[in-house]
Length: 374
Image (cartoon, rainbow, N blue to C red; front, side, top):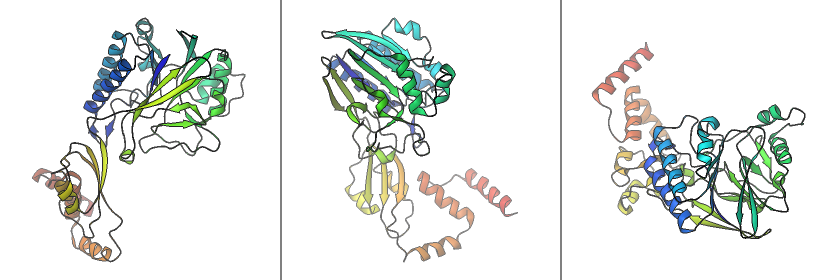
C-alpha cells in the first residue's frame, strides 16, 4: 500500500501581505499529479488545511477542487484538523464525503477514528487523531491523570488499543519531540513558549508509520517511520534555502516501510540574495520569485526598494546588513536629526513601498504630526 503524506497546506496564507492563492493552486495540482503518477492508494493530510479558522473563499475553493480531483481519480483521502483549522467547519458534510472516499476526522469526540484499508498483505488500519489539547481529553477521560500533551495523546491511544500484530498508520498534528533530537522549526509556524506543547515520540511506539503535521520543515523524529513531511511551500523568508516536498510511504508486509521524499517545484520560489545594490542590479536575472534582498552598502540609499523592484517585482523583504559600521552611524544619526518627522516618515514610506506618498497621504500625515506636536 502506497500513501502520499502531506500536511500544513495553510490555504489562504499570505507571504508578508502577498496573496499566494495562485501559487497554492499550482502546488495542489502538482501534488495531485504526483498522486496519480505514483499510483498511490491513499493521501494522508495531517492538519492545518487552512491558515485560519474562518478560511477565505479562495482557500475553500482550492481545497474543494483538490478533494474533487482525488475523489474522481478514486484515491481515498484521510484528513485531520490542525491547530489553525476550525474543526467544525473543516468537518462540514463529513458523512456525505465519507461515501466519496474523503474521510474527515476533524472534531475530537473522545477517541481516535479508525479506518481499514487492505492490500495483498492484509489489512492496514489508518488512525486519524485531530489536533488536541490536554483540556479536551480531560473532558472525555475525567478519571485519567492528564497533566500535559504527552499524557493526553497517550491516553487516547491507549483507549484505541490498536492491534500491533497488524499494520497501523497514525495521522496526527502535534509538536512531537524525542530525547537527543532537536526538532527544527520555522518562522512561519505558531510557536509555543519552550516545549510546553510537546508530545514525546515514545507514545507512538508500535505504529508502523506516523504521519505528522504541525512543523513546517521535513524531518524524522526519533525513528525513520515518525515523520514530518513539512509544509509544501516556503511560508517565510527564513525557509528560502530549504527544499520542499511530499513523502511517499510504501507499506510492505509487516515490518517493512520505505519512505521517499519527492521534491516540489513552485510557480514562484522564495529566494534570498545579498550584496550591494549595484551588484544585485548588475547580476540579477529578472524574476517573478518572492525575494528577500539584503543590501550591504555602507551608506544609506535612496529609493532602494523601488530600484530592486525593477528586477525583482515581488520583493517581500528588504534588509540592510549589519555591515553598516560604526564609522557611518554618527553621520547617519546626524542626518536623521536634521530631518523633520514628516520627512523621516516619507523616507520610511518610500523604502517600504518603493514610491512616494500621494498629496492626500502627505496631507493626512502632516495633520497627524501637527496634532502630536500640539
